[in-house]
Length: 366
Ligand SMILES: [Zn+2]
Image (cartoon, rainbow, N blue to C red; front, side, top):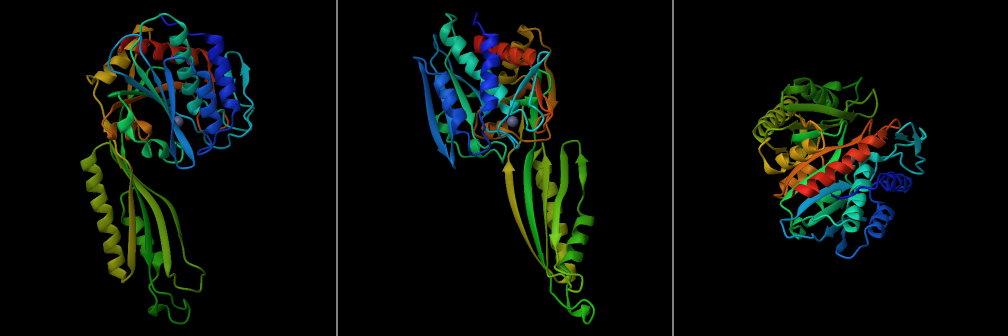
C-alpha cells in the first residue's frame, strides 16, 4: 500500500497556489515540482514550448509493465497573482481577490505527493509518466506544442475537471473557430447611400441566417463577437465577427461547417460584398466507451476506494482532446476543484485527499 501523507499533500497544495503562474509564466511551479520530486529513479525533463516549458517526470517502476501517463497543467487563469489561500472548516479558498488556482494545481499537488509516496514506500508499482503542460488555459498550447513521440505510455489519465471526485468524461467535442471579415463599399450615408454596400448589414444578414445555440444533442454554434463600421454617416465598409462551432461527432461538425460557410458566402454574394473566412480547428474531439481499457481502469480504481463513477459528456476541450489526437487513449476526470475560473473557487481537503487516493489506486492497478 502506498501511504499518502495528507498533511504534506495539503501543504504542497498551499505552497503551489502561492506561486504565481499565469499562462507562459509557469517556470517557478516547474522548479517546485522538480525540487519536490528529486529522487533516484525519477527523471524530470523540460521541453521548451513557446515562452515556457512542458515538464515530463518519469518514474521508474519497481516492477516491469507498460507505463501510463498522468497529466495536468501548471498555468492558472487570471487573476492569479499573489494568491492568499485560506483554510477554514476543511475548505480551501482564496481571499476573494484572486482565483484559488486549484485548476489545475490540485492535480499538481496530488501528482507530486503520489511520486513522493511511491518513492518513500515499499509498494510495488509499474513505470509512470507525469506530464505537466503549460499554457493550457489560453488554448491547450502546451500539449499542442509537445512532441508526444517522447512518451512511452499508451494510456493517459488527465486530472483537469471539476466537481465531485468520480466524474469520468467520456466524450468531448471537436471545436472549429471562425474569423469572418466582410468587405463592402463605403459611401456617404445621407447623400449617396445607393453607391455603398453596407458590410454591417451583410454581416447582420449572415448572423440571422446562421443556426445558433444547441443544434442537436452533440452540436453547438455561437457567434461570440461582432464589430464594424466607423460612423453613422458612412455606409460601413468593414464588419467582422468571431464565432465557433462544436460537435462531439466529426461528421456533424463537417455538416454544420458546410452550412455555415454556405450561408456566409451566399449572404455576401447577394449584396455584392466580399468575405474572408479564417477557420481554425482548435482541437479534435474524442469519444470513449465504458469498455475502453483506460475507462475501465479508472472506474475500477474509483470503485476500489468506494466511489461510484459518473459518466459525462463535456461541451469543452482540454488537454485530453490533444492527447487522444496523438494516439494515446486519454480520459479526463475530476480533481475536486469547484467554481473554477472565478474568485469563489474552492476545494475541499477531503476531495484533495480522495483524488490522491484515486491516483494511488490507479497506480496500484496498472
Ligand atoms: Zn484546467
